[in-house]
Length: 237
Image (cartoon, rainbow, N blue to C red; front, side, top):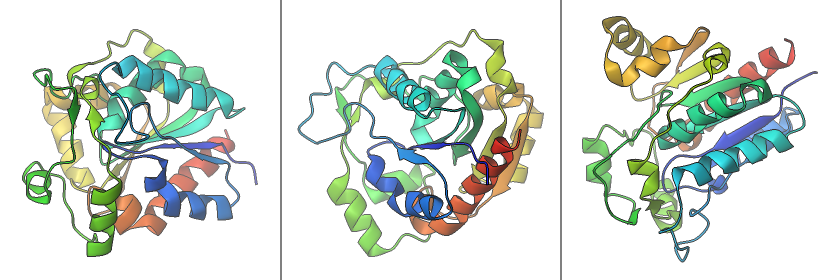
């Protein structure tokens, strides 16, 4: 079985550990998998004041380059911003992109955010902001709260301005969990500016996976299956 290597990048507040179950399933299926902990997310004791979005972009680029072959880069939530920037920086080293409950973004997510870091919000605040907790067990929520690391402020207030049109040809899969695929397609058709980067891509596939904003915990087997399918298809091209 020929397959592309897989790189997994978790969203805000998370390290590589967040992908453990998905990564294990993909390893068992024969994939080469690398999960990433971005700079500033290793420990609550880290100094996040000097971390920039460029550091996150560079860290992902380094892991993709080290994969040894064009990789399937899977990004979740807020890491859509540095993930999309990687498609601008090194599109030739990407076999495909997978966006998990997020879309390609140039950012910034919150240009007015001025603090050094953003701690994990309360469950109520997350749900009010559109981040569903559907299907997450109390044990999973406890683990999330216990292991969460504050997000560097620059990840919210900084953006990336793409210049390489080759990024538009990277095959892209959007795994829709909090918003159904038909709704996302409708937003694209309606021309909503916040989804304009997705509308510009030339090869997009949508996968519906109705569940929480964190499907790596609430539906890990199904998410792994979706990434597995992308990696198999990318390896055949």
